[in-house]
Structures are given as structure tokens and as C-alpha cells.
Amino acid sequence: MEKLFAGSGLVAIMLCSLIYCFFGYRFFKLLLGLSGALIFASLSWLGFQKFAPEMQMPAIIISLICGLIGAWFFHKAFKVAAFIYGAAAGVTLSPAIRPFINSPEPWIEWALPIGCALVGGVLLLISRRIILIIMTAASGAIYFTMSLFTFLIQINVFEKTITESPNTFHSSMWLLSFSLCFFSGLFCQFSDKEAKN
Image 1 (cartoon, one colour):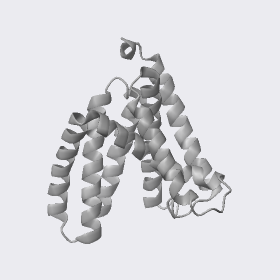
Image 2: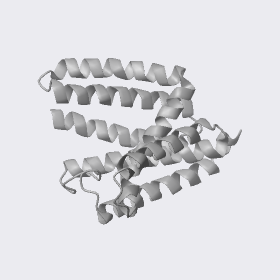
Image 3: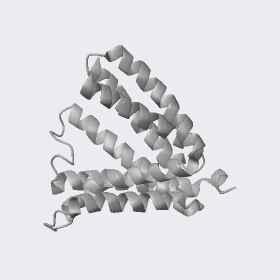
């Protein structure tokens, strides 16, 4: 039951991520609300799985309620939500960048995610069309790739996540998947004539 629910959640995140990647500018506020729902519901579900895994039905109900709260919050607190979403996208991208930085300095481990978070958050706050399209395409591509690789771990294609086992092959595959999705999303959004109006 738990594996089926987790797999269904990953498929839902992949679908939402693709919509965000290819149509993010046109439906930005709506998709931001959906993102809030997914983030809040996922955090609630993960909390239950860690601290009270036996409480399946309360976990589902409370996760749905948290999803509604997240959707409302992200829709109402637009600028805060945009910053959080951009920051989350930046942090998610940082493990794929880390294997390519040949530095033994321990501060890199925390400085890189913080730097990526600040860049992602600030860029998404700049609501000009070109930046917003770039950020929505990037965010959608990041969350699609992250969900896809988590799904591949569930079906035993990869043994560990990119953060647990940061090797150059895994990172290269992650970046290739991200790049294909990102550039396709950019092309689709810049070609969308309705979004220009």
C-alpha cells in the first residue's frame, strides 16, 4: 500500500512538473498553488512515515489537509511562495552540480545549496517574462528529473539517490534528463503565442 501510494505520488509530481515546465508562464499562479499543495502534503506524509508509520489513514487525511493549506498559502503569499519555490529548485539542482566541483573544502557542502537557493529564489521573484519562463522551465525540469530518478530507484534501476551516491555517471544522466526537459520546456513556452499577450 505504502509503495503504491509513493509511486502514485511520484507519477503525479512528474505530470505536474511537465505541465509546469511546458506551460508554467501561462498558468503560473495556478501551478504555484499546486506546487504548494504537493510540497505541504509531501512533507506531512514524510513526517508520518518517519515518526508514525503505522498511522496510514490519519497520514493520508492530514496530508490532504496540509495540501489544501499549502495550495492556499502559495496562492495568497505569492512573492514568498515564488521565492520558496525558486529556492527549492536551486537546492534540488545543487547535488547534480557538486560532483563537478573539485574542492575538498568542507564549507562547499553547505555553501553550494545555500548559493543555489538564493539564486533560484531571487530569479523567480523577478517576474519579467523571460526570467519567469526560464525559471518555470528549470523548476519543472528539476522536479520531473528528481521524481523520475526516485521512481527509477524504487524499481531498482539505480541503487541510491544522487545525494547518497554522487558519482559522475549518475550526475551526468541526471543533468542530461534535466537538460532535455528544460530546453524542450523553454522552446514550448517561448513559442506559446497566447502567453505573450
